[in-house]
Length: 354
Image (cartoon, rainbow, N blue to C red; front, top):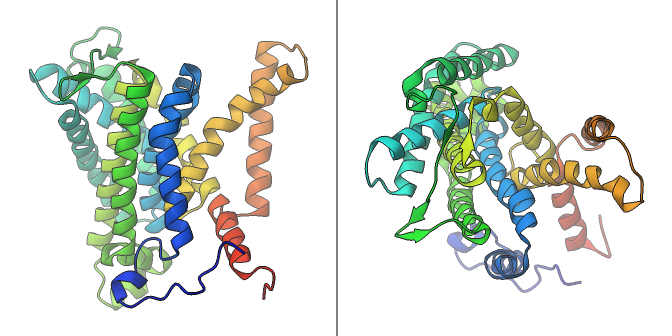
């Protein structure tokens, strides 16, 4: 009864094409932002910030970037971890080698470096697609792993390959507490989510979706596959690179190339598939699923007073996690975002669905 459009008349094309045309959606998003910006920093514990909220925000940003490439443009990529690593190490080098470089500029320059690498490895998409493109992007993962381990200037001549950052500041204010790190990451996520949503709603987003659905037909009607595919790689790599820099600077603080190995690429791909391909909201759902579920599965035996071996618990968590992924993909291949959309449609039509 509360989720209705009755009486919500649109008097202009601008009103009809807004991101949230239903007033209830705008109210819900406003309340959600108020909770995230005000209540969560006031009442959340340090463990909640470090173990769940900050990883969720950064991985949501990375999944958002990957969803633009895979979900909206249909270009399969298995090198997302590599682009995160490029963003992290590029931002680290800018911060370490240029005195007084602002933190935000360093993070954005890390995204620019990831864009260059992403476009370079996206060039094969002009000739190949599907699994062949996935293998080509997988080469980026191995190449970046090798470069981070062997090229000393990447790690600023660190003998172990491990680097670290400290004393993060924004406009002279320290970013040291969990609350400050959380708000810093949340600000990045809000800005990039708004930009991504408007991109996919515009003409460039329609070009990406046309290439995804039928690239030959898209070329016939005048869409340039070269521009569409490479622009998708560029935008995706930029967002992923910024997410990688945030993961390294804010979440880890000290890291090595193993922090961005191929498992990170697979995790992000699972987030996009489970959350929902071609959906901005699906990126958030997928990140929440990947971050929260393993922690919940680790703690279930404790809730029931069971004591099991740590190694066994880790293996059981992996098995249950994989089984749930397979089960979910069978029951709803379009992801959690599709379930969310279906639930909203049923609410709009209740009690007379048709």
